[in-house]
Length: 304
Image (cartoon, rainbow, N blue to C red; front, side, top):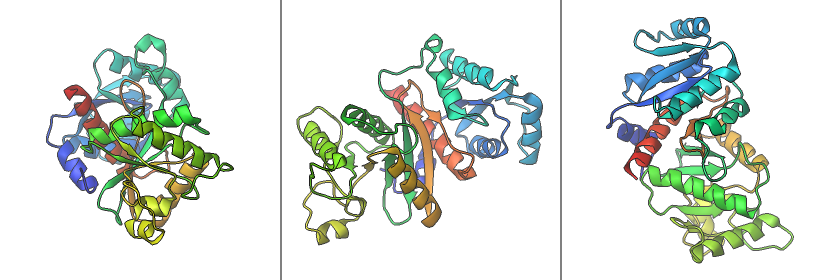
């Protein structure tokens, strides 16, 4: 288990670089992150997009493209399809979103011609390094699945558990979040949490411990859980925070990003390869940490 991103990156540096295909790579912050990731031995890059714009953006961050493969494809949709094809052909290990909409890239990833579609649900993972905690925590899903039903929440958990396994947490604790800790028939999130907890207990969700409903404070803070008299294997020790809907996840992530010392790595999982999906508002380091996480995920899949 990594206590912080520094430990995660150090582990990612111990193996040979993975190859990332970047869709619509003419974006300065993306190229800046790729430059650092290449210098640190995390990745080698294949850039797809408007070549003239890529070269201009690279100059702004002193990124030497001498040994970097560039495919000149000015059309954003075609650039996304090219990156998916590169992964399908085994020329790249995973993908990264550049200056293009997430939906455009994921449509290419899910195109049946490339064989990258997984068996389940695509979901958004925010792996967070919070200064107040001694562990990395996942929050899902604040970016893709809007109002998940119970089956979708099961898949969200399974996707997040897979990421936790890839970073060395063999039996992560999952907290389905709600506003209260008791099951309330009028609050759907509490009902879902109770069902998911029982499903894990019965072996229907494997590789983790689930207990809920839990409110955010007693999911991550043991003192808050003790103060409320909550007896739970997860309370205060959550590794995965399952939010009830996209609004909750979006507000939680942005609140932590702007009002606490949080670093994050953001990926979309559920396809056969991970996809680095960050927004333009995310920092250069978020993009860098996302590359490190995807490298570890690719290494883990190779070992399985």
